Length: 111
Length: 114
Image 1 (spheres, chains in turn red, purple):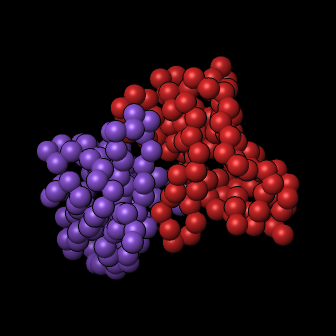
Image 2 (cartoon, chains in turn purple, blue):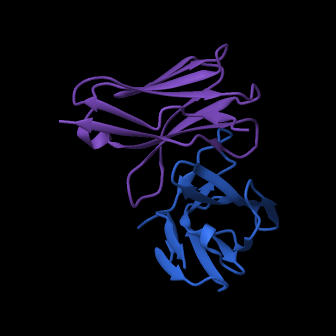
């Protein structure tokens, strides 16, 4: 049973517009959520995170929103740039457990 | 220099062969992990180690074994490789100093089992 779900395998956005990547989770014990970005031929790199005590965290062009009642989080990228084209993984963790990853969403930002 | 390194970066092997993938880190982290990535399946945890004396099975440990030779080194072995172990393998590290778990990944090893 998948505890972290990214239901959109891919997303296409034009440069300058907003990209919104979504993630749903089923385990109510998750208390920390992360987004990783992965380019081809490279390992995933940490992008941004949010604790369950918050509903928003912002870092430059990247903002993560958490809706605990809906067990949903989203990553907003504004404005989107071609260099943002990558696979984005949502991950979640509870306490000292290991990370649980979603299957990823491939974002393509076209000029 | 990279904080998390993996060797080899690419490997082709035959069914039944034993192979070892190695991971080294200079971040001083106590936790290390091995994942595999398959198309459409995301990252799945194979084994993890919270310190040198600690080894734990992950979601998909069958057919794999690991060795934590030192704090900085964590190797993954396929005792008898089979074609469905063809995948991209990632090593990762994290620290317990920061209570919020953030993992740092190596560049990956692309393995093809014929």
